[in-house]
Length: 276
Image (cartoon, rainbow, N blue to C red; front, side):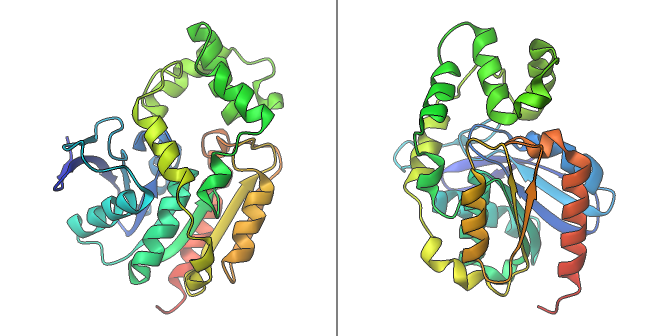
């Protein structure tokens, strides 16, 4: 196992490939393995570093005194770059991971070659806003039979057209190695992650990221990171590029790996040509 030992946590990580480094940061309740549709491909050209956020998967906290925060998780991400002696990296974040990536870039802009902010937010409170549809999905992901809970999780990730005609049980089983758990289960850290996300807001500082090449991607059918959140984020980061995936939802990185990986490659290569 690859573990980074910190004062109050052990962070599990995976590193694959050679080349310019990419740091991948995951969202609420998803292990670093959720990036495999990207790292399995991009590791042919880049050094891909993905990890489990503290308290999730194979990472753990070693103290119960500190309250979980986005700032703390951004510090974890920076510590990983330090541990691998990466002077700077392309940073990719999905959902909560995108918020962590923003904070990391604000804390250490010289360590970030580019930002890719996928299905994410300019304000953490957007992610925890309880619209009727999200409240219903959230309830269904926590109550009922295991099959019902798995189906609700799938509906958070994929649009109806993608799920139509698919075997929900088989799809949920295929996602277990990526998500890092049975989709019917909710790790205890999830509620702490949501609380940390809801309390975080660095939107007033996002103009400071103007010098970092930034890609903002939203998915048309995303019930969590709604397209208006993505558009707002792109407006707040000067010079950012906004892309909207028309037939996808929150799980776009899993649903559309070829399209996502192509966009990321283009973004990284474009950023490499910009003097830093």
